[in-house]
Length: 245
Ligand code: OAD
Image 1 (tube, rainbow, N blue to C red):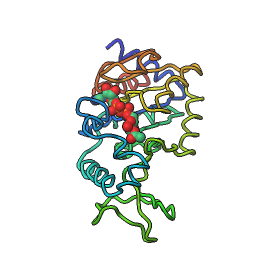
Image 2: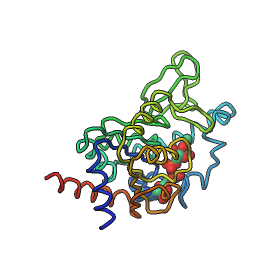
Image 3: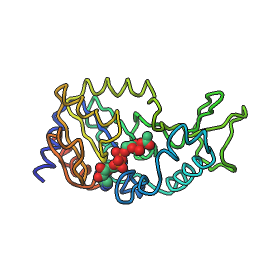
Image 4: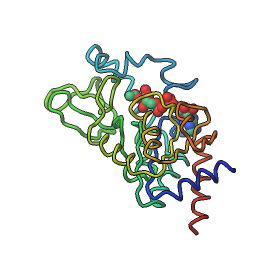
């Protein structure tokens, strides 16, 4: 409770807040994380499924994995953690949500502005003409093709690829302005997101971490809440609201 009040105090006393999320925020919706005991990378090798080389080698195999994830995601809902983050957007004037997740659950949870660092699993991109569009319905055949005849790919960032430049610039701007950063459900292993809490801290921001496990970010955290996001974040929002009432 002391940690929760400490975390809430850091957040509500900040005029500019960044929230950075990873797979752990969606875990309580039933979406597997990447590195935990039940994580995707326990059963699959990223180099077979999440690299441009894997896609050139076997686009159907890569698409099968993404179709399986899309199918699973079509049946899940945002959880109280997503909803609490959506509420925070209305509680602070300068708010930026940065996510590494491609699942779209922050939008479904009511977050209006989301910087999706690794793209969106529901969007496709043509490898020939560059057409991009949201495509929620399942594909009849894999791999799917564009009207121009080119191969479509998921509009996500794979290992070894550049992150979307505009999104990255907005993220760095927000990190430069923020007075606090709340880091939720990321192991802090994949760059550049893993460096964001350190960048913010270096510019004087305070760091709050919500994660049941210790991570690389713990060393820089002013407060670490060892709790599930779906439990901790609504509690933080409750304390925050009591203080503005
Ligand atoms: P990871 O799977 O590496 O880490 C998930 C984190 O969530 C772990 O630290 C867990 O302890 C934590 N966690 C689990 N359940 C939680 C809960 N209920 N509440 C809060 N935290 C919880 O996922 P990411 O750090 O997001 O990239 O992984 C980063 C990137 O690596 C992903 O975007 C993906 C992956 O490979 C690409 O595919 C490019």
